Length: 115
Image (cartoon, rainbow, N blue to C red; front, side, top):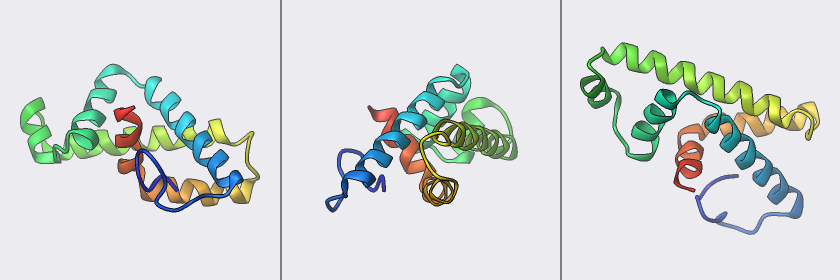
């Protein structure tokens, strides 16, 4: 799920395509709801590929502070995606989907930011 930004590497079943579209929409809505500074931090980190140290120098804060901000933003995005998907998926399915999303969150964010 969400292996490539433009298309999946192998054909997905109709339900999987629907779930992937729902995840992308929930993630896009969640990212849009973030404060602009949080959106920018995610863009620099996930889409532009800046690591924690370069971001810390750019922002004039410690690398630890950048890491904590990224962790806080990621946690918020995951909570928001869960909330948005909960009405559409059964609880066990929701947990499986979110485990996949969490494992590939940086890639998923970069894909959504590029669209």
